[in-house]
Amino acid sequence: MKKSTVTFKNAKAEGKKLTMLTAYDYAAARLLDACDIDGILVGDSLGMVCLGYKDTLSVTMEDMIHHTKAVAKGVKNALLVADMPFMSYQTGVYDAVKNAGRLVKEAGAEAVKLEGSANVLPQVKAIIQAQIPVMGHIGLTPQSVNIFGGFTLQGKEAETAKKLIEDAKRLEEAGVFSIVLECIPQELAGMISKAVAVPTIGIGAGNDCDGQILVYHDLLGLYDDVKPKFVKVYANAGELIKNGVRQYINEVKNGRFPDPEHSFLMNKQELAKLK
Image (cartoon, rainbow, N blue to C red):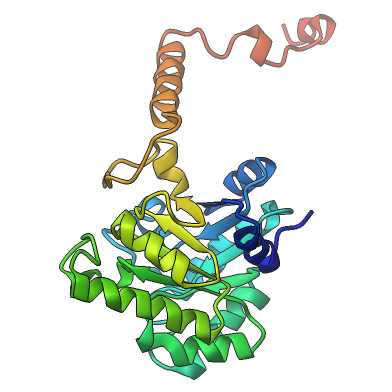
């Protein structure tokens, strides 16, 4: 059955953990969708893991639409969420609704994700009023990396922790269907998860969230420029790929590939006419 925002809300009510991963192309989307993942996020993390940027700030709306279109073609069951990139919604309500609409209408997203709390509540409300579901995102919000001074743990002190709890409540009141909690202490994530009725999706927020999300390339060992503490490599596909490429190079250089099994041969009678 096709997953939806209702699936997410029901999962929390029933005490069922939610699973999400990022995807940025058709092939990855098909693989993840076949595994019965609950949600797929086309994250602006594509700037780092696919486009080679040092952070997510350079990702454009055109980047997000291009990659979301590709992912949408490969998703049949999971809920498809697309990130709104830096400066696609911070400039005001009109831009936020327009760009969220593009991600749905042009790219095929079923929901959008915004970073921030009180500063983006008008945008969140307006997008939802335009009939587009919104996923919130608080804690370490990568688009604010220059304000935070780097990718650092958030909510370590009681004062900032209380603010994050209030931020989550405000987002819930604004109408979000779920909230990503990134890089905050596990105890705080547990408090937030109890304080709101919508599901929380953790990334570096411990096991007390209602679900978890990781970057596809991190989970499979395909990207190691940055190695966050919260990433677990479940399969080192990066090494597997390098081993395969090295074997290919070796066989080509030594004349073992392509062999007859992987070549097309002419009919002997036709070949004889050429001699």
